[in-house]
Image (cartoon, rainbow, N blue to C red; front, side, top):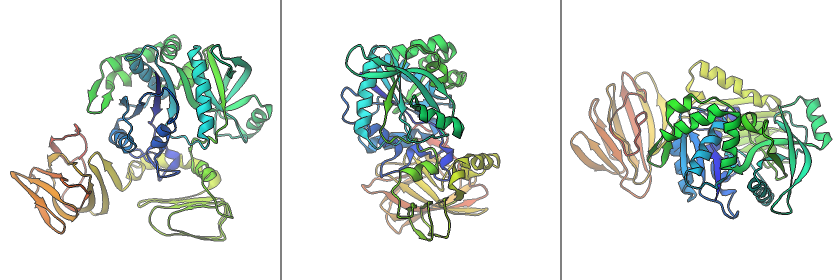
Length: 477
């Protein structure tokens, strides 16, 4: 059994203001209509012997991940929830432990959820070669054939050719990993012809990588075994034990194992790979006009060259600029030279330090039942647009500090208010007084859309007393 392991954690801060803590880049459609997660899973279509994937993600993203997989008719073997980020070595350890619990011969394909590949056929061929070497007990990584001296990637130095025992394929000896170089060193690496970019993708048998982890990082394996043993199934998810996993050392699989093992092999991959880690990276892969501009959305330009300009709603008009990134969302605008766009992480750190919500969420917030979007907010009132998916419902709840007025603009709502239950249709409304138990449900076949007006002394999302929730949540609406 070949088990894809999709690493879907992380916050992608260098793609702010699109990517945010509660809605990161891997869950967004950055290249085409599919999200990065969906594209990663579907990239494996056509390979033989591929099992249902294991997806590892942040607990805050669990419902978005599940919904996106359902949208492409993928039933994961498991969606594993990390209570805290601990880098890739613990994630690989957990995946290996879970896979071995059902198949002692399981082979893992480790894939980050935020990569872009143009040549899927070349990717499949590299996977086939990697599987051969993994079955020969190698720990295989994929090295990207560099097309220029990039200073934002780590490199892998390769050595002699390694013939596969079970076939005619060849891989390369993995000599050493090196950190992101300066420009001169990157040029030296590329010119030598013996260095490849470190992709962060791997193929190995679960038992082999777990044995090597146990040899070089036993505390990681011990913590992960305990976190799995004490973990709980929760709806469609597997929730790792928080206390055990938080005690796990934080380390990457590169540092923990690959730099130390004598069993490493590298399969070169030339498939138009990009990790989409910055606006510069996104500019490099998108279709450009005659002046090398990428424009998305409502954009008007004149005498503009080499720019990436993206509007999600409002018109962006640009005149006489070069080599810039301009990105507009409903609550933030980023303007930066393309050469500095990767430094946006420093701005996000400042936003977090100042407790600015723009670092965490968009105005549109996703929930398992649908979404809500803030339209206007002042000191004692707030207006939101709610969208409830067919068959979905919010929790049965009450508020200590606010009352709510609901107006249906599309669809039909089944409303629970105290001991009453009734239907609301388009252009009908109801008032939910402070302290009254209430629930909103969509019994129809089309999305339910309504305007919610909140009034009261405190309007925070944490003013919820939840009595019942079909999604098993405790923290949000």
